[in-house]
Image (cartoon, rainbow, N blue to C red; front, side):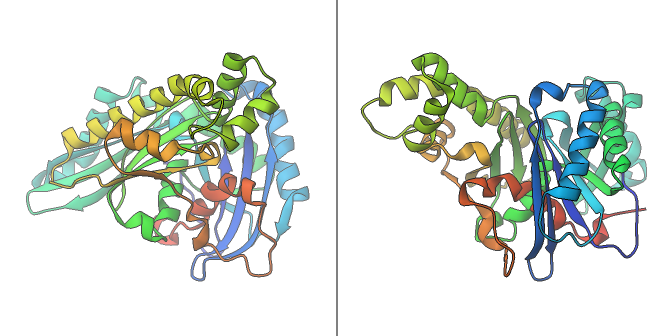
Length: 350
């Protein structure tokens, strides 16, 4: 991915999504949070290609860094997280004897599996495992136009970008600091407007996503039951899929969108298992994100995917010390930014 190198400044995490900007500053040696902040975005003002959104986004970035910080930020040097639904990531294997041709192999993988011309993409790769015979390579690509626009907006606010990566990579990094992150895992990160899906097996192996999130679930209930959005949200977070007097209507409202998330998760799992070069078995599904606050969600995915699934919060890995933490219901919003801030400086290349 696009990366720049600054030798001395600490790294902070900046998460960019359709609905908000979140920033977190963490001392990765002590897992100590020094500061954080967020501003919401109006999705109607954030266009898909971002061309018409630049002035609005610039104003919101300035508002975030100048007016919305709790505690302090250690620098203005960020690792920038982008939604996985806007990126492409795949693993493939190749003979170890052909490592000198790895760039050609990566380019071929891009041309075969990504529906955009190579010249329109930023492409990066990493060897994530090797044996005497084979290499396992993670390839990641993102549209240049999208990245260039985000970089222009962020830099116009005086922010230095050290690295760009898919946001689900950051969530996996935070999970690895907890007991939950030690097993081969399917991550389902349900945000407000989209869901990112990834396979974590010592490294992110493959990603996917779709434009269904927590707001979609709320809207589904409101439409199906003909009730206001605020009431629908309350039913979603208080009743969800658990037993109750209105259970059948709520479940029928939620099931179509949740089934689509489960189906996309199966595709990601199938892609991984068909191309895995070893006998690693996926052992769990961890559901995270601000849209995961639906009672009964773990049981739903356990039944759909025939794999143990539960809602997880790696929040306990962070130490806020003297900084007032976000309210409990807002904490999932900051997980991605915190994971971005935990990037090992050695990962940032010139």
